[in-house]
Length: 225
Length: 400
Ligand SMILES: Nc1ncnc2c1ncn2[C@@H]1O[C@H](COP(=O)(O)OP(=O)(O)OP(=O)(O)O)[C@@H](O)[C@H]1O
Ligand SMILES: [Mg+2]
Image: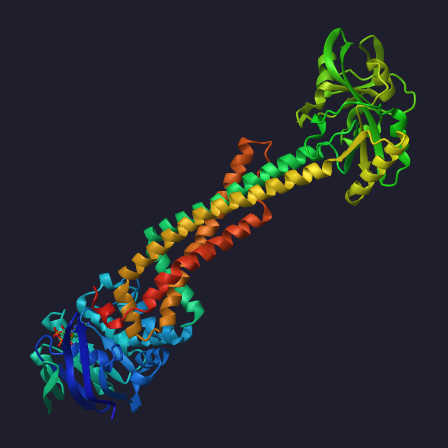
């Protein structure tokens, strides 16, 4: 089992009010799956994704990533897992505005401590794969939305993570560029990466091989095709 | 992340936010420049005073008649009563004292100098040839060979006097008169200008025996003694006092002072002043530090979502702290460099404006300024950097 969530709850305290964003979630995901998470706003989709990506900790329950209890890891070890095993893609791209496309893509390699030579080679290869070679030295402001998201995907996958987490990856894109991004995600899935997509887009959600429906912090449907 | 990459990345960030960088740089630079300029000023004052004293002679021991209870103070201003004369024989007796390199008896008085058809009221010193060595004076022309015995009637003129009496520059060898006594111009002083309120360009020097006759006195105004070296000053002072007391029938009726003690006091006071001034200047660096801290706090809140992103990409807390610390490191480095340049330029302007004041920054000033700039930068960025590293990644990412 690649990802194993058992009895996961996440409670936010707002003043004297408790918000139960996740309510006793059980979810197992095997390596190489292509999974979509859909549901109304506020149903806990992002919270689930953040916990899987170890950006957030569950209030209770256990989370095993590749058989390791990641909530028990030290801060430095968690950072290493995020760096090497997990890739994040966001609706708003989150590119560093002062860095070029190539420099944005290079960031995880710098954090990993790779040599300059190796970094240059890997960045060049990924730019090629994502069809961004001619945009390498452009800053985010000079790129289209679709190009920005492709830079973000290149950055998220350059260290070959086991799982790619995408929170509304096409939310800020028009239909056509959205489709390009989806095609890129599916290409990565075919390459063996586990892909988890949170989306409001029925068409995109429907393309996944496994569709999870959430409401009020609970999984109400889990369908595989 | 390697240190090298962190340095590179933070450098990139610094140059990307140009206005912010300039602001911090300016604050740092002004602080550093203030340290350099103000310490130069203090050091210049110290050097000026020390220089003035040294121009009077080094390793100097001064004897004058009468007992003065005053300690320290200004050698020239101590006026004791004269119970017993300090004679040329007294002076000659000092020659054999251990530690005395050379000595010069001194008489001072005013007289009328006439020559070349002109007349002037001047200050006349009566002494011996050794006086020139002791007082670090030298002759531009001619010789002066007077000793404490009977001497030929020769006179040495200050440059200004020589030029005034003999504008053609042919003073050497001319006949002049002091009162009704005739002297041959045997030498002309090298111009020295004013030191300690005393202009050597406007005096004349004659052999001490002639001065005593001219002023009709047997008593010396001073005996100047140059000790062998710095260490010999105190023993020589004691030996001189003892020898003179013995000669004066056991009565201690002379005062022996060392210039060194006076000089050391001034030196200490002015050094302390320089440090105090440096401290004050360092306060402006502290102000710069507060500014740096605020600017960095703003930078952290502006880049919150970027920090969240770095965490999502797998940056550790230490990585993030390091990136922010290194940003200030670069800014401090640039600020210190700019401040040094500014400070040294300022000190140079000071020297141009006041040529008498040797306003050179002390050796430690540059180092101190740089170290203070770095320490200030690091301390000022510790809090913002640590705040950045502790941001919750989910909240940070959700901030736009
Ligand atoms: N940091 C937080 N503090 C308090 N409440 C929070 C916090 N984060 C999320 N919540 C709450 O938890 C619930 C689930 O939020 P979450 O962002 O996971 O929903 P979502 O399904 O991603 O919604 P959307 O489709 O609008 O993105 C919501 O009620 C939200 O208000
Ligand atoms: Mg969401």
